Length: 258
Ligand code: NAD
Ligand code: IMJ
Image 1 (cartoon, rainbow, N blue to C red):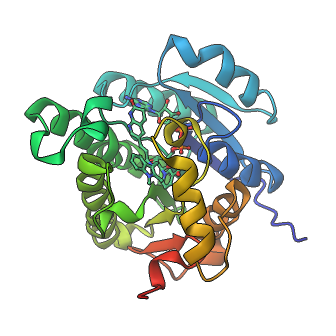
Image 2 (cartoon, rainbow, N blue to C red; image 1 turned 180 degrees about the vertical axis):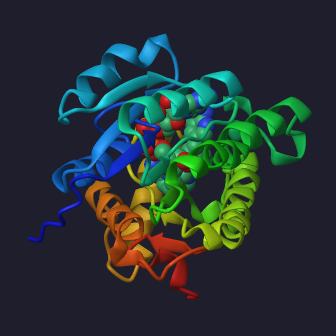
């Protein structure tokens, strides 16, 4: 197809859980382009799995980082600084809401459930970018996160995750405005549904995939690879003029009115 040579560039990739993860789709594209990557895993439970996946990539790093843990975040970026010396790309592919907040009525969202969803799925982008900024100084850094249409439209059961994604998209614009003068770009990809660990548990997920197939202009669902190539575009100089934006990689679904 095409190959981009990004050797000498480095990336921190948050959110690989398994081979289906959207973050892994992005890592595959970065790997093909020769980017050296640091992978983080949420906790001991995922360590062996993520270690195996990190092994697919030359010279990669593996670090434990629960994004609710500020000291783990700090030590993640200080280890990246020690090993890579700098950072070019940051990939945020992390989201979590308590299961009861995705199953029950939105009106019953608890204070604690709201805090959890917003902290893990939105605030974490601010923290990560804060730690990444000094490592990106003078390097045309680029930050990409993953959003969903539930940020802009009501989607059954998406509930407090929609609130968190609306925050994530606004955080993207606010960070882009502030970090532009440091040459750092910040964008988010609003992806269509993909069969990952975070999506599979959703009741009626198969039906949602069918609705996209019927109504999206491309009459199909998107692939993990298409999220990867869109991220590669935004991270690399190919997307050099793009910042603060939400790029819909959804087979056109969000553009249809009727
Ligand atoms: P996934 O389950 O593979 O990835 C989610 C990741 O979040 C996991 O690696 C998990 O370990 C990590 N995570 C959760 N809580 C964490 C914490 N406290 N600290 C550190 N990591 C934590 O599923 P995915 O579908 O690849 O999700 C990645 C991103 O894509 C999410 O932001 C999700 O909202 C978004 N997204 C997914 C879809 C979809 O249909 N799959 C569509 C649009 C957007
Ligand atoms: C999630 C819930 C409801 C509807 C949904 C989704 N649709 C899609 C998703 C239509 C596509 C997947 N998605 C975009 C997400 O962001 C999922 C986030 C998520 C999933 C879980 C499942 C397991 C759990 N907590 C979760 N937290 C966030 O316990």
